[in-house]
Image (cartoon, rainbow, N blue to C red; front, side, top):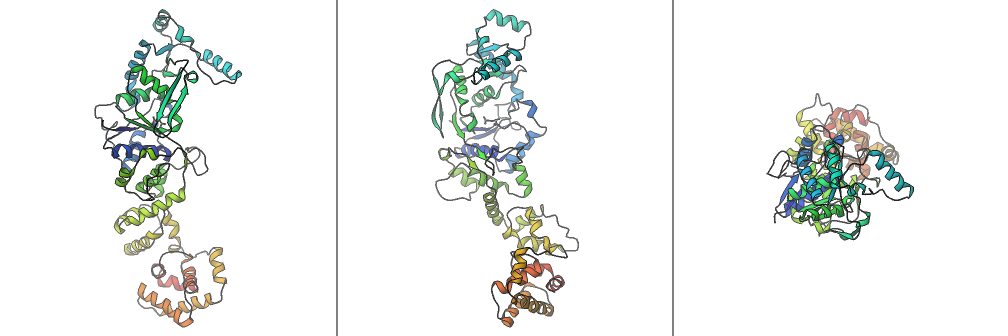
Length: 472
Ligand code: GLU
């Protein structure tokens, strides 16, 4: 059996990292078994659709390094892969279920349904459709259909017994049939509900493994009844617990939670994002954290997906991104970081700019950060923060150090890092100061920062005149 997984987003133009995490798991599972990763667009809720969203999904997945084996742009015979283009298919299967007595036409009006809802509310019971249309005779149904009455098609649930959902993560779950609603399969506009379309599509597209959010776990009893009604084999299910936001709440655009694109535009590398997200809710058998895509594929084990929700932690993401930045060659790094670097470099040589960017390679957590980190190379008057000021005031020798260094700098004729290092050394010998008391006053007064790249490199880039000016 060839493994086939699918990623089935709705085209909303926004992919939060929980969605992307599901895609990652589907992808890793497919590739681990040499299977196919399929993209299916679930656009039956047309109100949520956003123009260009499909291209956006392709772009996101491609940036993440996923090879999409099949999808709307590369049909391999299982298409269409966009649900709104499959309306006839759903209609045919819904009618087949009616034939089999497993579904029925429902002509209830909004008022009738509201009255049912109110009765359920008054009894503090969840609303379940009362099944009245399932009792219409064939003739009555035909008459209504002929008259052009608006209808939906509902699934006919067994009223007794239990249905089992078998899930690789949660095990066997028993659901009482009496709580299952005669859910709508086909809406009055002819579109299927997710609850119907997912079963039809997963079957017709020969999906072997379904990985999706845990919120679908209980619903899966209804899907299983559909598979059984058609006599189809069920896929293997893995329902995954949620990724919560940093505040512990559900991730959403409305909460302002960062989407993949937001992170990408901030200068997080897709490979780092994928690596980080793959470990949200899944753990490898070893302590390894940084994985190439190939290593992820090799190590991924769907049975090690966690039952509990995980929490997004931007600090940890920064850590991963930092590791990936370090892995780039200097050339790759320069090409990448220049997309984020927006400071006005007129009057500076390309060599100067490259050197500046390079000395921050070790210090960077994400791309956009480069502008803040390098601010003091571009402004005339630097402002010291409290910590820096306190340091300078903590010991009178700090002033001797900067005075002495200033006169050493004035003596330098050839401004290069060797001569700058030698000047620092001279201060050390002249004053007998070393360590923090030697380096920190120079760093603070010349660069404005307490921490940063190698001191001689920093001073070199600031330039001799500015260094002298700042030391005064
Ligand atoms: N369109 C559904 C969602 O975005 C997909 C769920 C599934 O994978 O079946 O939540």
